[in-house]
Image 1 (cartoon, rainbow, N blue to C red):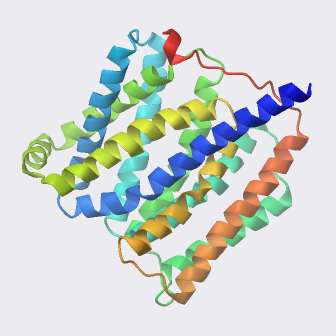
Image 2: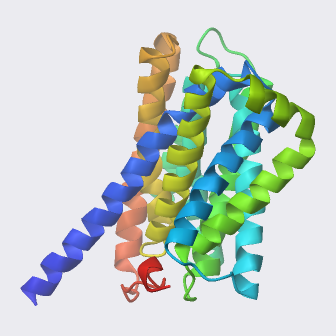
Length: 317
């Protein structure tokens, strides 16, 4: 029995580390996206990002001898592709207007939104302290966007806030649509990339071609980072992990994303927060992590669900 518990603990730690790695990669994506949107439009940058990811995933799929998606995989992948494209459109459009640091911190409200959506779906309401933690995080956002004097959030801040809401919906739906089915992680993600690539290239095909031919080495390094690290690795890892834990825990563990976003924005992007902004950042991070602990205890007190892989391993495809 003790041996089984150790294996279970190691498996949980592995899932946690994968989700934290996703958070670290995404934390650096805001500065990369901001730099690229200074050279091309938002839809062109996203078209390049999805196209790079699509080509890389297609190569992996062919090497792994993946089978054609089933009707349900086309449906689920298509739905998730639409929501993922919506998230990235809102995030990238937002970060083009606000700072990379603000975007990375505001998007962390996903950590608050996701457990609320999941509890509504499961009809298992969260305890009152969780909502106190949520209020603390929201106050932190108010301070963050008013770092240079109290003011309304700018349009970019509001777009990123909307992205946080859509991401919470996406993560919750991702777990519910895939948890009880033997889906291939890579096949589902490949369909998502195909949907996103089609949408954004169709939106501005001439701009896509001009950017693809005109970008220099620095811009292409940014595109490759967004396409390979932030899309291929992150989407596959997120889908793999969320099927082995709760959607709420997945978002909560990826709550380290704002810390990485701040580190990258301040150290590499030369962005500043100011005293009020630093207080807001501290409240956001503190509120979300407190919310994480409350949600974890609440879920632990509920009836345990079976811990077993619910995705057919890609290697067996």
